[in-house]
Amino acid sequence: MVQSIEFNINLPTPLNISPPDRLFNMEETAYACSVPSSKEPYAKNMGDLPLEVKRIEVSGSECGFDGFMAHTCKGFSLEPGDSTKLLISYQSDFSAAMVHGDLELGLTSGILVIPMKACLPLYMFNLCKKNSILDAVEEIICSSPCHFLFMFLIYLVAYFLK
Image (cartoon, rainbow, N blue to C red; front, side, top):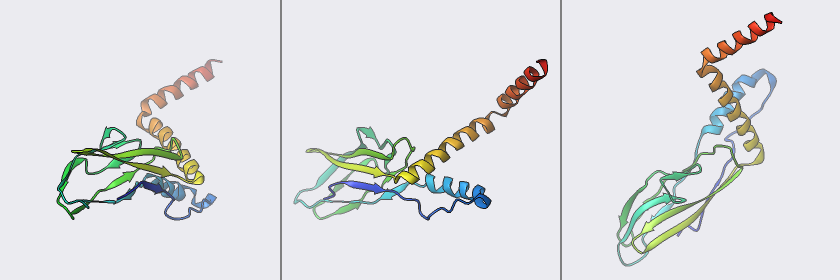
């Protein structure tokens, strides 16, 4: 039986951030920061009677919460000795370097709670958080060019009226 699920996340390759390759490295970093981490624990019926999992939740929410995602949210049944694979992933929003959650299997006899933890090294957390902020600013500017142009025109008018 799985006691807990831990996601110890690292960037797939060391990123060499040097000025000539900065644009390439920004794209590489953005990609590396957006890839979710996955685990595939097995659920096995070790008993003598059929086991029915009625629902799968993450921290009381259906399918996912706080970056954790159960990709199979529907219940399932296992005959004695049978097993099935569960796909669980974590995708950080970079609001915290460590996040805790619970995988909750709703059984006919009660709820089996499996603690989950996701950890990002501090260097990765800072790099990805900075990158996500830059992406948000870029999206605001690029998604509303009319607003940006309007603000720029107001600035020009104010400058020339001085």
